[in-house]
Image (tube, rainbow, N blue to C red):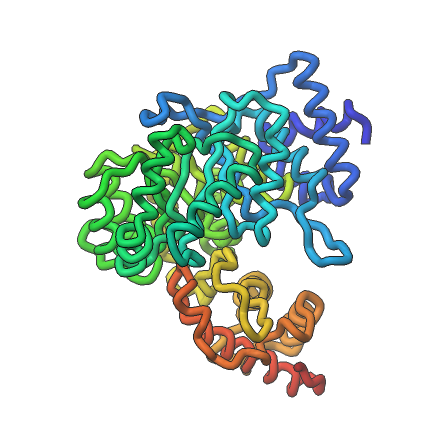
Length: 461
């Protein structure tokens, strides 16, 4: 692929031709992707106007942050002798591409990519002036045992990221008041983080949230925060007076932030990719309004239309996602009233969906018995539910559907990762931010797999 051809393709993609080009295999080869990114770099160095993501003013820092944040939880990966690793060359070029197009907010965490995300993004950002990027990291609440450990972790994070301070620092994944009180109040970890803020090693202090509404109200009513990060998307929204249900509580959390005037950072704007892959009936409703728009762009624009939202983090694992997100959030256009109504109509069509509400965050891991829970759910949500395979009534599937689903299941999971290994021990339950009853769904998928295996005459382990 020549640089000239890459540049013409890029202009077409930003103009709205992404879906067609991707479907046509424009970026099937890794070397073509790298050449495309190099061509964009050359165009920028030649002085071409590449376009920039919209920014929003963030009062605690007194700076403009990009509406799109680069989440470092789902970076591109490759296989090596030691297993799956971050594709550092491709990942760094994607980060550079995002930076050239105005993305200045980068979000990492201790757990992401088995602890390798922090070191990767720290190295990738070294080439840029520190005052042109805004870096967020998090204290890993689920593994904390006390203050001394928290101090060691914080210093390690600064070292990994090769920085002297974090712009945003969060208490990661707060889920219960008891845990918060024990670790952050009684053990003094919150006071310690406030001391680090006073020292300048933390510029803004907040938290990311996966608990219930009463706990969220407690945090905002009893403590002062510079910001908070919540899961916000149109599938998880509840209206005033509508009782929260599972992860469907975003409306309550959002309204409390607005009441307290707390700046909002957003995770899961596309709900782990689920809102990028809607049912055909829901997609048809949105296509009537904007035939050229991706389903993910609807989710991003819905979040960006909410007052008080500063930045939404998108875990971008491939170039297609980066392009679509940047195109959507450059010269940002809030949803019109007609588009809002279209989303509501699409939700009505989705009401009967049997998809598992997993965002593939992998917080439930590791399973002590080796089950790859996130991949199992992803296989069902991508290849099972859209094909009409009902977990409660697998006998309704055709022979072709059975064969196709089994092929995806067996080709994407090693024997040691399959659902037959689940013992329903329940260790994953307290870790799930979506409050999914994981053993129930895992066993249901195993029943389907075994049923299809018997039906096709091929036993499945």
